[in-house]
Length: 94
Image (tube, rainbow, N blue to C red; front, side, top):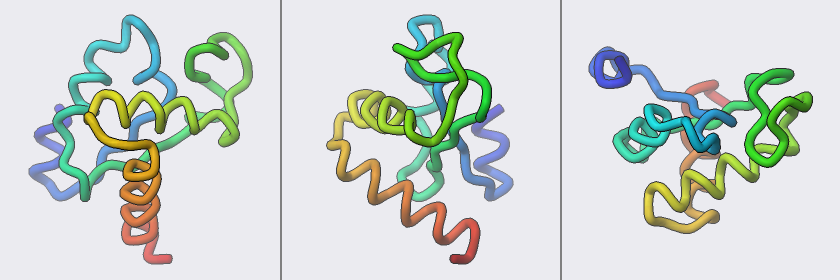
């Protein structure tokens, strides 16, 4: 499904699910999405990342998503932060 949305020109947003042990599909998507099409999200107030599962989610927990994405994409936390910041600015025309 992610490939179809990418073919249509959409960005792919990933949140706390990518940190879950059973988040296999989200992890596959995280590794597949091109750098210029990846954004991060909270799904607030739901789907808090590991180690906060079951708690209220908020933007303060995005660092766990960024750390997981960096590991899955074999890059640095700073690179993911910069990439997703630039993508969000472009997406929202900020």
